[in-house]
Image (tube, rainbow, N blue to C red; front, side, top):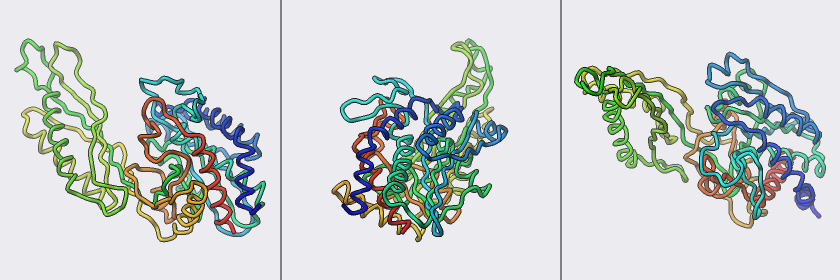
Length: 407
């Protein structure tokens, strides 16, 4: 057998262990919010240590975590130096949105049925804790590399933008790899992605008794007026097309609304949170300024109404750096060999931590275990699942690619 076949064989022979590792990770909740994720890092570190992959623990100071709206974060970093040469970092995140309703499986069970593993973060992206850790184990057992270094970064704030994960570690110079790969899906290698602006809009009116509504100013009615103006933008956004394959056009979503005090009270305050996805060609500052202007001008049409707008997140788009070609080439070559079909290089409408590495001048791509689409994975929906065969094959692709990158 050649080296690639030996890597594949090692992964096959240890696959049951790999699945058990993923089950153990799923079984420790990391719902974000509330974002109490240090306990998961402790458990992951125990499991990694038992496999011979000791992890550095990098807790983020409590004040910074609380300021971000979370409770606890400990980033894990496994360093595997082999000799002189470039460092390749593999990054997966453990934080997830809460399970929500409609599950037919235990969200924290890691149950296996018909070749799939179920649970929150099974597909996005605790699975790639497993993909990357076992790819490195296979590499060391079979190829015994003598040059370069591999680093495994497991972080816990991707849902809130990554500033306390990769952003914090880059800022404090804990990491600075030459190349990086982040958690993704198996059937494409992602080289670009959308940006994301999230804003909280609070509409202030004046409370009043519902029997004498004219004595108040209805904040909900004003909020509906603003929302209609915002939603109208989605029709206009469809006329703005991205030139990046896999990305279509900008769009806006309002995901949370709350306000009022009681049924018989004219609401004096309504708050909603919006998510504006930006294609790589857009300027984030211009997008934000345009939304703020639209909200202010629309609110001004309602007498007695004031509005506060607070930016919660600004995640810039990921644009491909020229130096990412070795990553793309290795993943495409071995992806086609393992999956038996071409692995295209595309953009995605999601946003990820990879942008932080690219902003620091570090070429990166997105690739890991998962289906062809987010919809198939049930990510952020009930019964999130992962095809175990995708996990097995993606691990082989990463192990093979690391072998090439460290030659």
